[in-house]
Image (cartoon, rainbow, N blue to C red; front, side, top):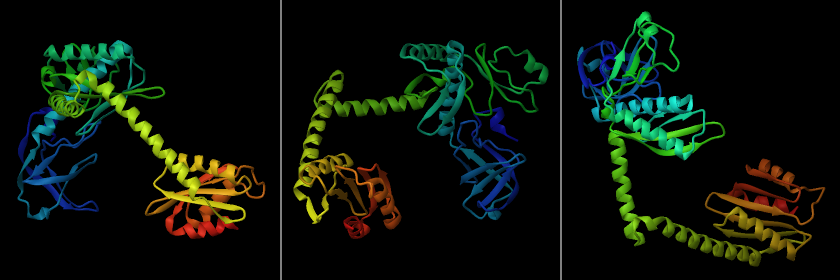
Length: 385
């Protein structure tokens, strides 16, 4: 029996092992009763222990729930104590109830449809099929926190078919089936759900958005509630304090200081790139009458391309190869000022890929490729042909 489905606040139970064995996953037991949420509906499984042994994996089937342990399960007694990590459980209860509230507010205010939802130990989010501007998001958060502060009762219901038909808060009523489980927030929301929840919206404490990601047709709302929100706030405040001390500016000056720092970094990156291009040009060697090669370490594809064009101004009728290397690979750029119909660059690189386990491609006059560094000499011999 799933005790967590009736009472999310149960943290431990003494129960009987009904089955024990080993399969392709590992050693497992099945239990007569459980307080352990097995995961599902976007909510992860509980962190829990059986007779003091951590549950490594939970596998739920139509008939049973298998709990996998890293011990010889034959040594376990018939009756065992099953215990969950309450701090983690309550965190998920806060996040899950907060998600119900914010999602329903978005449905009511903006006719949004929830298309995806997920909770992890560090992040919670759901996706809606509309795009919301800053004002709409602020309105949704304000309304959600009003619901939280209103101390509305959160109930677990197992309705009969007749009772289900009388409920009027649904946005999309579920079809009735045996053991249908509903989560109801008094006079505000009701929805079919198998997860764990708080008893009163006040226990959610507060909800805030941590990130908003806009996609082509949808929006993903990342959020935090309750204790998790407080912990994130404290962490952010410590980081903010450290940044202001390091930058020697007040909080409201951090954005400008960061912008100035980025401009300085960008300037010096440009200087380094210019130096690398000049080095590639200076290092260019005529290996054959028609082939020029230059290589330096630790540069980017853009610099390889720029240098190749500059070298081609000096050697306009030759195949130019600029390259950079690390311990494992050689990245190279090929360039011809004028296309050679007999030897288009893109085809040369594709042939090199086959010969030297590389990757890349290009057009008739230019292209980029990567090969294992041990194949460098073989590549150069191939390009000189």
